[in-house]
Image (spheres, rainbow, N blue to C red):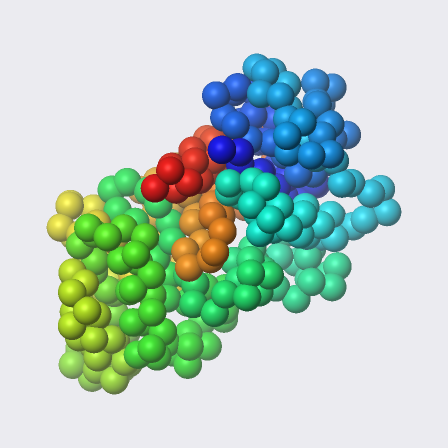
Length: 298
């Protein structure tokens, strides 16, 4: 079992957290990135089989090019990782953070990692899931402007996300958040709950899935924190990630569910403001690698 770690944006904290994480020889993982940014004790490999897991040595598949922009470099690392995963030469992928602005400037029209992996693996039904204690969160929509969320929420989408969540954690007690304040207040504050979310929950129950809702988001996450639910389906990015990062910052792991390959990621950004200062915490990347390993065994 071997996990490939993509280095992320080379001008961010990706190189630093890769070095700090992989100095732990218990992790059977190697880096896809630029060897020049990973320190002197690197073992350059061309094939996965050439990796040697020795304490203090970083295995790296060096595909760097000095002419590449940071955005182009970030995406080249990902392209190689997907290639290896689809060929089953690696067990999983764990990703360090990229800059969405940088990759788009380089000509890659993706809102983030999740959308890239979905397109490259030709996956239509997928979702972002954040694994953390005391509960997990799955997002019904991902990296889109807030004014587009209502349009993207449909009965079919919510049902698909509930099914993906159930498949990822079969015994979970699932709760679904409403989109509007007070979960719409029976239509007074918005009708997406009545028209889309409630019918999706009813359809999921007919499939035997343990799911309840929709609940007002301002009280739902507290109930989940206190152990009433194991997994929350949130309607949009910040609705789900603010409580997760408040309770488990640098401990949560992003898992893209629905893909034919295993992909996990850190729960933080590129950290440009602390890059190169030896201040970056590798905890989230270490956890992402370990979660990837667990998913391989599952």
